[in-house]
Length: 302
Length: 131
View 1 (cartoon, each protein chain N blue to C red):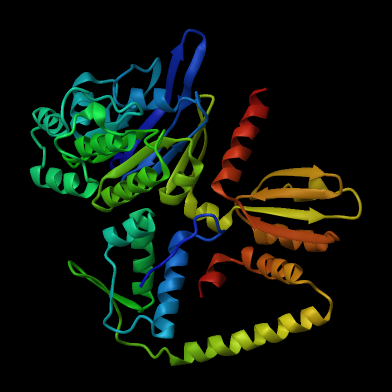
View 2: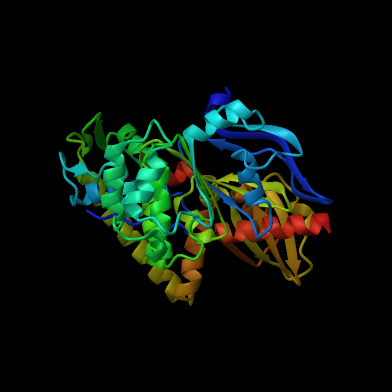
């Protein structure tokens, strides 16, 4: 049953002093797909990833990654053979050439795939003899990807992979990610670049103040999530719109915005019966959902 | 044949892809026996999750528009008379044109007409939209 999840955590918590960096996180990431992990700076994305990879110990709670327990030393080690990680800073040995770096990394892995390495080297257009320190940030990302992918991992985790890249490099990065997913690798990547997550992800998990505040399918979002703006000639009948599927309602004078995650048709039907004088239905974008969710959780914690 | 998807319209990407393939088949831009791009190639070209392509192709196959041959890819299916569909679309376009010009005559602006159409389409049930 747990086989379905590449990542599965229960009540995962990391406390630094009095600060809960991650708080009771129940995160589920399906296999065979691309999941985006969105959150503001300091929301707990990196801390979560570090716990998943066994780089830091959870204060409490538990979790598995490719079915291996993250707080179990031997299982965590086994997991790290099947999982590849591309960090934000892409730390590599600056004095080595690309070729040396590849040879050095290869020596740590028994399941390294030389054919795949050559194909990636060719596709990514990496200059084999150039020193790592002379590579652009985009090239360094490509090298980190090659080192991560040449052992065909079950799961690829990336922490802010597009940070600091120019638009062309971002495009190439995204192309490499979708091509990798097409070959069966599950991808989980954190980002605060909403537009790129919206393009390639199947699902999106949103974290705020260390807590999971949303876990949604982008197909569902596009199909069902709507902002319904209603105009009235008197005070909007807010209470009439507390109905299934309505996430929240906001009024501004005689205008009312109804945010729905399903049942938009029923809301529109009710609005028509409620003497509405103007009616607009607009699809929500991931940016809308992100801002609404994060601002909403801000109000609740305040 | 190039396809385009827009991530910020209120429509799942796989449905956008289905519509474009269907349209290309209905208009004859894609013809029986033509090969469709492979999973990896199309995902990379559109820069979308491969699941988008998988879902679209699976649905197109269910509808009998394409055949998926394991190991060799997807092809436009040979069967099915498509002519009536083209005619139906042409008829529908005439009706829309007539309706729009009547609404214009009633004094509605382009923007208002567009908004009315969008409001009608956006909240309609997914099953109705897919047909």
